[in-house]
Length: 404
Ligand code: PLP
Image (cartoon, rainbow, N blue to C red; front, side, top):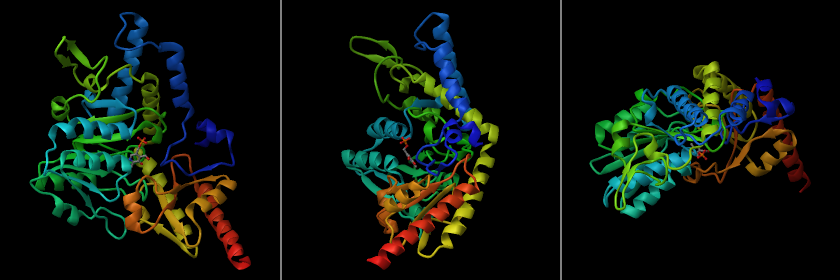
């Protein structure tokens, strides 16, 4: 598998354990993007000439592939965006501004990434709505009883992650959507940034209104992502940005909007990155998303066992079987940043910090954690390098303490 990723093939000693931040790119994705520019590049939707039609077809095909991958039958309900952050801001801005009133309630969870927290918090401030945060259990799962108790007649939006980027917790999306539908008439928004890269999505069966993800975390390029929505809601929702391609007729006073998905894609689209994302989903489908998840879970189970076996190491979140490929941990007496620096000297790349989840860090009562995240190209040698690096860091710090 490493041979299929040029960066990893060129760096045999590299243990890349930061795929939750961004994944490496397989050669097929890089080739697809280069070929698009070498063979098919033109501004789509605009030209009457054959090359522009080819560019339009490439963009259209990419949308169809990504929609199918995510289990969305109606591909016109997939809006290409820059990524999860833009997708979530699109909904908060377009749907939220039009539908949320003073006194309404918006509910998020304590484990949301800032991208699925701050847009709703700020929308609530702007509208005079109440912003509520559903708590998590002691082992890092959404507290469903508490969430249920927060839902009522004034709840307008419920937003939550498919998978926590900081803990790896896989949330029961369908059960949460059902709970919301039983208790209130709210918009259900799922942040799939850590879902789509790691497990089957099945949007049409999830019961949510919107689902967002980023191409760069799933073997695709940076700068492209998707927002999947239900047609009836997208059709009623006002546009997010104004400009070329998203209009039907522009009068001196009034403008009418293009059909889906163009209404939400103002300006020249990012065709090459969409083509790259199309190639990425072909690549992942070639492995199979069940197999991707099983591979990550197997590695994370070994990592958990080995890390928990070390004195002073705490692994945060639920049991490995309930997580995707994330191990988030702290080591007594060693700041995660120092740990990451020592690991880096050994070719092990991990993330250290608050992982854009400061509300969660406060609830875990830690300033930061070290996070190792596994993907399709990792194997047990990466776990071994991680664990021996942590041991080495402990030896170095013990030495300091002894000398000090
Ligand atoms: N949501 C989650 C759970 C994430 O992990 C991330 C990225 O780390 C985002 C949202 C934001 O994604 P992007 O920076 O690609 O827009």
